[in-house]
Length: 268
Image (cartoon, rainbow, N blue to C red; front, side, top):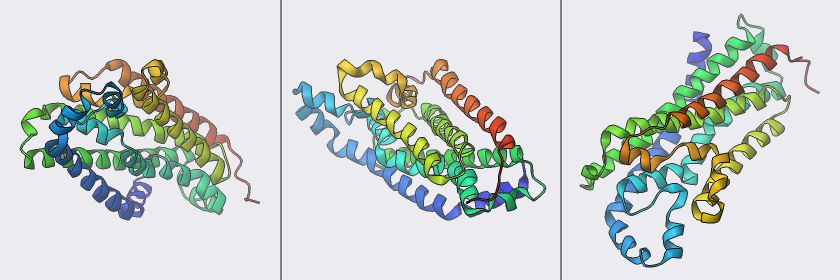
């Protein structure tokens, strides 16, 4: 890992990090407030209607328990969008973006190997994703305490959700690196990475809302972060961790193998 590149990457990302962190903190504060204010009323209204009850289980969460509400907040498109700014934007801009601008050759002309370049950016991105995930969950706990419902949550299980969720978005970042080193232009690398993330997101949501299609959930990486059961029981499935870790390892191994062998002729 290159220390100078690591520090400069963090410095260059500081404004985006602050903006995304503030947005995630605000979002994290809202979720327990909604549960504490409307959760019981919604449960009484929706509980007698099977159709509404099914649609209330968005992404495996619900608004009838604190852990369920936090699960909804975790799988919500807003969270995915903000986390995706770094999980997708950083790896795509690091190689394909620099390549398209014609600046990648200048970066690699310095005393840094291609693998060190990729590895340093991966570590920096993983750190940034970890910070953002921690901010949202910290806001959840803070808001739950302020609303007087923190006793309904096993706070000791929150770090497990942080780790599982962090690993999920690191997996998407690794896929982004694999796509980024494969193309000389931003559009195809970005398109493939976004297509993978959005397709898996839609598959997971559809599977959670449509019982007959629940079997398709296994094809989505989002399925391997079971937020509500994890917060309730604290049982982190080793199979889920192993699968997400395997995606990270395979995608980064591909990037490490392909990138040093790519021809970096001047862009057309």
